[in-house]
Amino acid sequence: MERIVGDKMNVNSILSTGADPENFEPSITNMKLLEQSSCYMKIGHFSFEDAIIERITQNHTDIPIINTSDSVSLIIEHNHEHCNGVHEHGIDPHIWNSAKNARIIANNMYKNVVQLDSTHTEYYQSNFKQLINLIDSIDSLCMQVLTTAKNRSFIVWHPSLTYFARDYNLKQIAVGFEGKELSVSETRNIINIIQQEGATVFLVEGKGNVKRTELIATEIPSLEISTITPLNYEWDKELVHTATAIAGK
Image 1: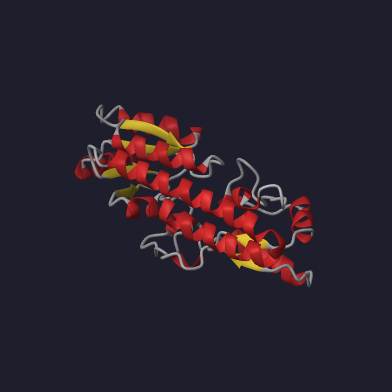
Image 2: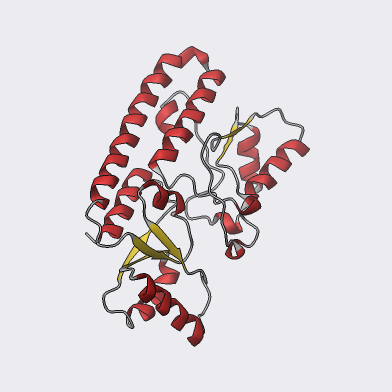
């Protein structure tokens, strides 16, 4: 959004850096920022966004709500017990972890921006084209990096890379149990899954999961551990880092 609007609009993020969408509750400050905004662009399919929209409705504001996931081919989670109700109707909400989806998200943003401010249409159009070129280059680079991947399967605790895996014909294996102590039987079960799948890369979100992952890795010396940040502000660099980690480079 910032790349599209440049210096013509201020972009405020309801979800601050480091916040967890699964435990997020908008503050009074967040809501005041929202009430002062010309629109709210939601990623879609997160329950915390439903709470924000409900507050908008209750306050009788006329802020337009734009769903940036419109036209994205959504993935239904077959097993979403780990989601604790945060994902809407079992839909995988992590649509931004995909260059192909990013084109659609950017287009949804662009179309609505020019409706909000038609005076600077040419400026927004130029920025939008530059953004699409960046997204295309990231997509091509990820594809190139992954052509030499040792294995098409990778392990994660939380299935945040489902769309990324679909883009590049990869297999994401989510073992769940984020942030909790594992029993001996649970640990053994995860080790068995990794060995059965022949996966050689474990992608870990956050420092809290690293130690538990290292314990598992002691049983599988060939397992490579890489830390990822799916909510990284530097989205383009994060996608390339993820591709590189999966490729074992």
